[in-house]
Length: 329
Image (cartoon, rainbow, N blue to C red; front, side, top):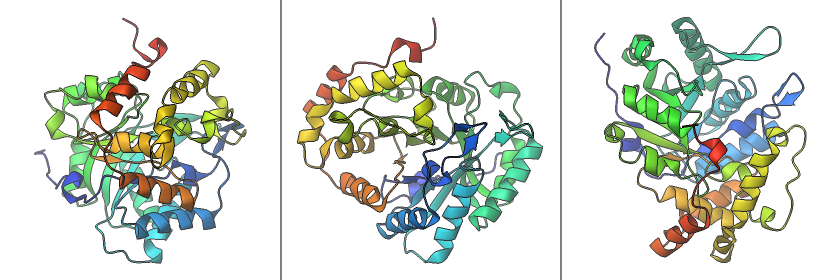
């Protein structure tokens, strides 16, 4: 099958600030363990989306596994509730599945792909999906033998416009680029974890991809509040199950960037500003659990770019991620 073509979403964007909606899926308990961000009402979720869309945000990121489809339903309802002048793009993901025994697994087969797209379109109440991503396949996924023709078929049918991968890590993202799979990669990028610059920035296939920057606020650790308080995550918040060494590293190193708190907007806004101003990144998708957080993110997107001196200070304060986040040599 010849490769189907569709305009890249980056050519349609007028601003780089998007909205992540993992949090709109609620706690999403699986075998007593939270896979989400805690309780949130439908009313608050719709208010968050409304505030984002009214502010001109174009890019909404979701997934079929966020709240077992609840996030997609909320996004669909919000988009049906009102009309907005901007060109709105919805990115969703497939591949993470809930098994009959209550556990989770992954399924990237063509059969599951077609069924997932049909179900996502129904929940989102849309005729097409702008970006469809494989959701966190293993970093060592066998791209050479994965049949991408069903994804090209979905583009030809007009059901999706672009496809790609939401990578577990930047190392998995590099293997996606090595294989030339799809045209979109979603990858972690923030002031604490800048590996995208080194590992993807000079890749020979870089120009062929739109890059979605996820976790721009370091899972909430790049927070003004956590400069002075210890984190206290509820049992319905997935961060309560993070390994202590990861939580401690995130907290300790976020506090090394406390100098950003002295700038207009504070730490969170300037950490987000850092991610937004990187030319490698096409769109940035911070989540928001309140309308005020949406407003703060919009405010951050309107701040002046950080100076090169401040960027160098960020790099010197947190030179690298911990060794246990890196592949063993």
